[in-house]
Image (cartoon, rainbow, N blue to C red; front, side, top):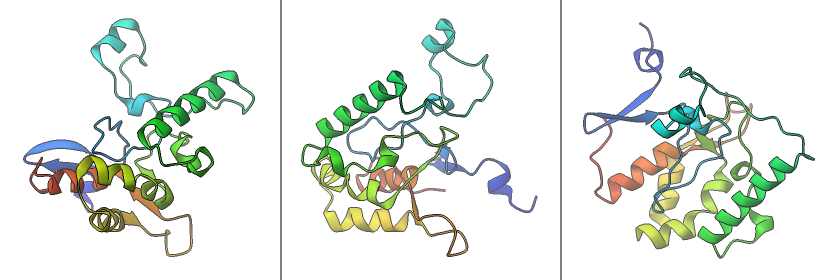
Amino acid sequence: VIFPKQANGSVITVDGKQVGSELVGQDFTDERFMKCRPSSVNYNTYTQEDVDNGDHTMGAPSSGSNNYAPSNPELAERVQADIDAFLEENPDVKKEDIPTDLLTASGSGLDPHISPESAEIQIPRLVETTKLSEDELKQIIKDNTNGKFLGIFGEETVNVLGVNLDIAEKLGMIGSEE
């Protein structure tokens, strides 16, 4: 195989344990970690309770978006709940300053990336919760920022799993990636 890591899903291993994929977002609930975009498919992960309740897709991998119209009340409710949660965790941020990608799911619902602006707006909270310096966190974000494709297509993106693994390593929670 020419690209063995990519052929196996770009899985990241830390301390001999698979912790995620560079290609799939995760729901990070620990306050010391950066937050991802919302996912309409729960990042394709399900608890046993979800399976028991039938809140899954027959065990098959899924991706996608709800594709709600802007006028759909369910979208408005979900976005408002996400705004409220973000402002509670980041009290120094104004509602109008929250980057859109922190409130909207990607087309696949699995995107592991956020914009550099979405990463930077979380720095004050991360300084407080991790006790890492602003400069350390900015460097971690820079180290996990991907440039535009071929230098001209798309936008710069930050891989949230990469950021969070670097934070966890700095905090002594894990060893280094293998």
